Length: 132
Image: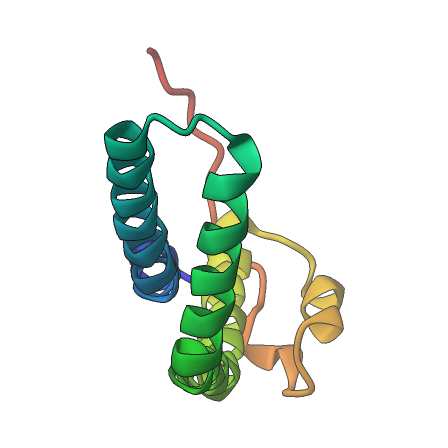
């Protein structure tokens, strides 16, 4: 996988995470504000009076948004699984290129692919001294 692929995957992962969390967080925020205003208006400062209604509202919201959340997660997981063959193929081709450019033994390539290691042969390199 290239760094661009990794960044795209991380971006999609964060997007899906925020899509899943946003409805429940917004509902909890709205419920907390409404309950807080009611407590301030009635001057009842009981912790269970704020906790129980928020819990019930969140459970109700989870029942309502649960199928959508599950659908989003399933679609994301299917896309990830569908992209595995292309990621493996790009990793194998990159390892072949890297193997050829670094004079790595051809036997190392047999660990990563079933194809013939003839593509990854030792390049003709001349030792040069580089000054940094």
